[in-house]
Length: 604
Ligand SMILES: O=C(O)[C@H](O)[C@@H](O)[C@H](O)[C@H](O)COP(=O)(O)O
Ligand code: SF4
Image 1 (cartoon, rainbow, N blue to C red):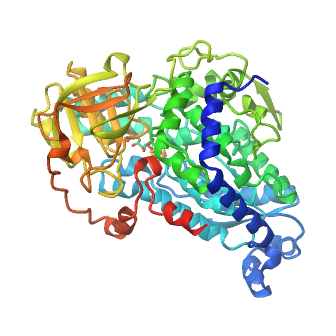
Image 2: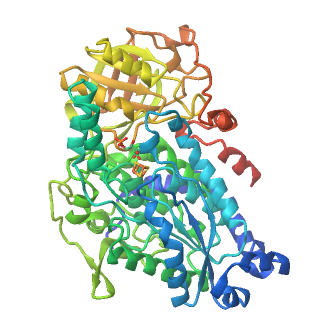
Image 3: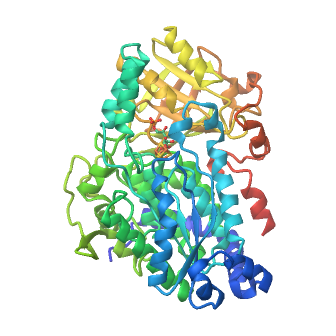
């Protein structure tokens, strides 16, 4: 095995050192759960009888403790094209469990929001908070204490992070994520974006836009851009929480079915031997592997928020400086839309996760000695599954099949991982450079300040932004309105940029993992609400964003000498008033933007 790159080793060692006390408390918790926690054997007869009352043909096996009983936590609904196939999974998985001398029951369901349906709508204000609701719902499902292992059915944005955060509280149990795979490619993402920009300029009709959108999002499976959902899939592979290579096989195929079956069989074996508990698999090395994969593939900026939250749920403390230092060590080796033209199906065909893991391992950029759940050894994740008749066989992918999309570490697209920390008198923010042309990595322009993305679009339609401009959208932080994605601005800002203007976005909000080409300093901490410097910017201030120096500056102004702009009223409607308590207690984006984790840590 190649020796670990010292830069990756240094960051990992620093995380281990920083997390020593919290990680020890977490491991003590799951050891206590293993000894005294909820298990079928410890239920009263009444509890137990309720638990298997409706289990049908599995009742004798569950009641007689004849083999492991697997809990299925499902995020099925028809709103997410990615999750729609999950509706049929539990019955199939029960059959696969029986084949392995086990049983399976649906432990519970968790909510799932499709960010594509809510993008630009009031519902998007609930999106980030839904991650924590999913974590809580996962805990409710597993609190039944009937299970020896857990299969989690979730793919998209906040769902995988939420499932993991909740499941890690039951980290004494072995668990796997069971993915569903990407929809077959439809209208190319770049063509979809082109029609959107035409529509934003009034040069395409609503009918033409709807035709393009529905040709792009046309069926069951994950959307094919490399956004947060597909970044989740990549991360679960490099954390060893899938069956190797399960991420990107399309839904409704024999291969997909075989991978689901293999996941249930693997989980049954782990549960039978009480092996590879989730809390031990998700250690500092797994978290660093996920960060390295994110940086190497140009993954979603949302993980600059979710990964710290997932890590904290396992007693591990990471920050944006860790990501920035890893970014300096990890080259960009994949260009998947919005970072390139091809989509995740093209990425998979080019060699996908098997080649990605292999080249990163060979370069010493991954912890090859971490203990995965989905296979005995991590090197299995550098192989790709295919059916040989009815048999699943895994094989290496020694070279990229499409160097325009996927390259070896030795010949990267960019020397660094394309997620930069930028800081200065406006605060700390994330700048994803991998999807932005290098000539736009340093940009300076006069501000135009907004408190709402619809105001930006109105100004755009009125021709007020047709110039070099730093579009500041503030009061979009976790405590203000729940930190929505502002991806609806992408077409308009793209039009301005394509007209030759220097355009940047500065916000304490988020962008979609599918956002690309316009320079954006996002997740700004401290947020504007409560008097952060972002609230003290004024129209006409000159802002300078520089990826190379890692700076985000309001030039020549003393922001501290100014009072903050007035904050908009808290959001109401679409249920947002229900979430006020979560906004009120939310952490900064860099710590995970959660209202739950501080008190969780204080409880231990
Ligand atoms: O972080 C992400 O990846 C996004 O939240 C993504 O899941 C979202 O659905 C986009 O809005 C889809 O892209 P469009 O909105 O461009 O269709
Ligand atoms: S990738 Fe985004 S838009 Fe597509 S199904 Fe998942 S949440 Fe919805």
